[in-house]
Image 1 (spheres, rainbow, N blue to C red):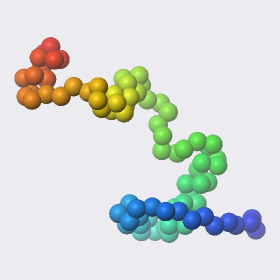
Image 2 (image 1 turned 90 degrees about the vertical axis):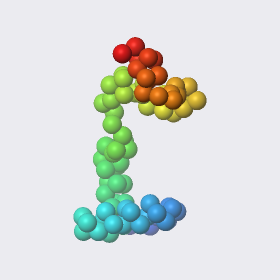
Image 3 (image 1 turned 90 degrees about the horizontal axis):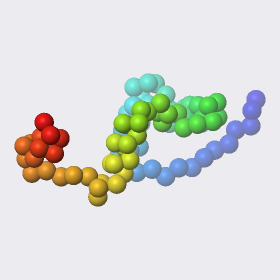
Length: 86
């Protein structure tokens, strides 16, 4: 049997509550869910829920969202259409 270790995490209550509900639907415990995550990371040497196959348009959109100060704002749908030249 492999040596086991424990971990302690701190997480906000609402996230924990929602996640526990999902785990319950799958019939797994918090410990099992965390172990699944760790096993996937160990197997792939990567974070499992990051999509590495994004196209350039999606990557650019994500970058724009990370710099919200550069985003345009509009007061009407007509203004959006004018900006998009449609």
